[in-house]
Length: 267
Image 1 (cartoon, rainbow, N blue to C red):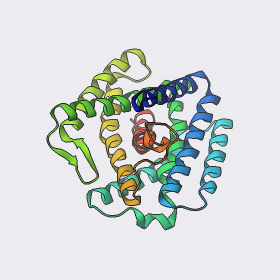
Image 2 (image 1 turned 30 degrees about the vertical axis):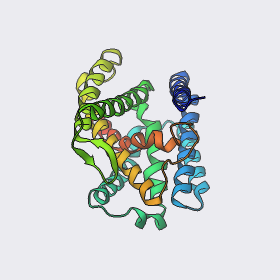
Image 3 (image 1 turned 90 degrees about the vertical axis):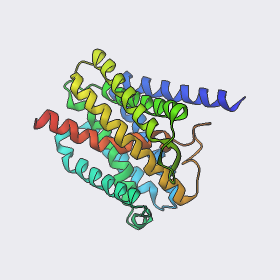
Image 4 (image 1 turned 45 degrees about the horizontal axis):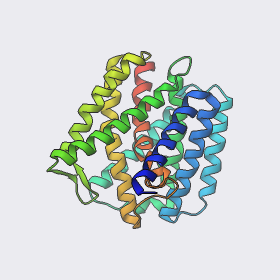
């Protein structure tokens, strides 16, 4: 089987599983992303030589089960969201100043604030609408895929100026701009089908996704460069690990969470 065909089949299975579990039921949604969370914790721990990763996996599972069984309002996670957001900003500060991420390794803060808690926030995002709208998560993934696809296509076609060559040599400024433009167009189209958000909120969501989703991809690329690995894992043939597929998602979630928290509770 050719590498292209393997990659296509693997990607199709991933997308089908994501769409089905997200839209089928609340239980399937929680199970899928709890499994994704545990896989990301495992892959990141192997990549960075963390020990005791199972502690964070168990903690995440318990939080996920608690979230599923209780009626927790999104506003109750405000401190969690701000904690994750601040940590992401610290990672960006180190990224732009070419400082190593390894100083956080001994504190295990990466596993806690970079992976585990963002997944718990992700589980809570549909509850900003009553009844909960799990289509929000699907729309976020669609916009991330749109950004990645068109950033690649535009960058490959006309890209000349590197975005951060030392971290990700293939990313270009032209591709970044192309990703923003097409993702905004996608958000406008999405707003015609998912009317529980107005078009303005969808466009703002798209802008946050393109900016911080791209930065999240660069952050994980820096992690991989520092640890000397190409992919976070090999669970998805042709695509690498689950963390490779979800790096943009987990990084952007705290920023989107704060946006929706302000919009629905304080605006």
